[in-house]
Length: 167
Image (cartoon, rainbow, N blue to C red; front, side, top):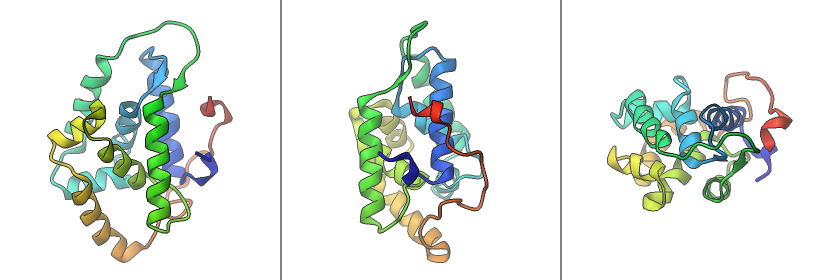
């Protein structure tokens, strides 16, 4: 995944996922770290999608936090991206291409996580909240009806991607 193809909000979530993994002494950045970071953007598109699906983003975030608490802690060493998370980024990139979007945005990441299904806790949390890929698409079609495809800045100017977050 080319990080320059991520929208700023997607980059922000990726950096937050790495920070969360480090704070919780996890040696891998997992899909659940990313899902938590996406849900932790209160004005972000993922939270908006969840609310439209009548799911409280805070409740979803707490369920993901519970899954993160189950991960083993490792003290010292490098934090790296898990193979599951790499797969989610690949799926998100494919989703962006399929939707003819220039950039990979937070909704593409959410769709990829939902696509993961029972392969990981993030997909299971979404499924337990009855959030499906099809429902996400339905909400996106109404949202995009007005706004079109994702833009690079996504209306909110955030700090640029940090080179240290790429490790």
